[in-house]
Image (cartoon, rainbow, N blue to C red; front, side, top):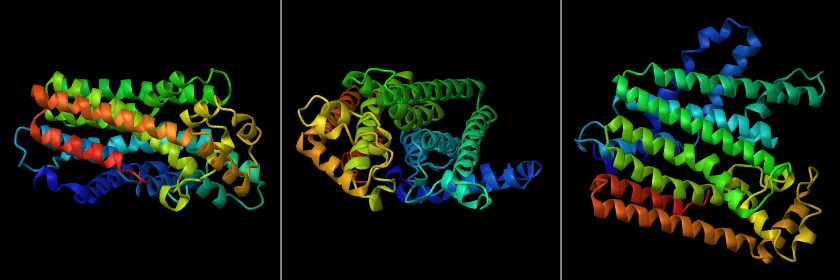
Length: 361
């Protein structure tokens, strides 16, 4: 199968691999009682159904960098590592939902929402939510450990395994550092200047959403260090653009398309580039009393959105997105001219850039 034909064909094998990885732990989970068994069942259920951006990207770039581009694009070990990357992603989603106080994900209840609903009806809401969030926190930790152990046990040459583990370790650390800075910004611990916000955004999202799968794919394909470095350079601005788009969609997008509570960022006081710009305008005094209000109502949320549009915040962040995508394209062009990346990889990354640029959900 040619790399350009992969597309949707990857969903089934990646989700099957992910289910196998999670199902393997079920017998052990049952040893610890029905509550823990149910937690694992729900986690396995909620872990599937996403866009699979990261594992798809890993498999596709591995195939594009392989010596024989016409060979089977789904070697078993590559597929297993791709599914482990999705485990890492889901673990971060669990932690993110706890931090943000969200109970929705992908247009339905997330793990926290499902657990709190299933808790005994005689328990008050606060206790149910504490139980659900604590359970999600522990499951996220367990999935991170499971993913790292899975990579350590993968059937790979020791040199490749060591490089892969180094990439995963650095990425997890960088992502946690980015999330930590994000919380500090939201709580007023860290000054919310635009440069800091953009650095946080790159660490929190670009590192594991784009750099991680691109680097893992390159390592597994035996690509040169120059090729890996080129992919990291492209992945950084592309990941930043992706998260900035996510910030725009969370405020200005449609819930039916985005699948996330459209008021959550405003209600939680999430400090994004949108807010950093708005704070510099004369409109901010009208936004500030509502921003970060836990009881923000739909009508008030609409007012804030209108004010953010009127002050130019939406347009400003969209320009940032366009600039980052242009940077990614320029870096890809340089890698193509220098021969650092082969034509198959250049084509695959170019399609990825196009997909990010045209993203609407």
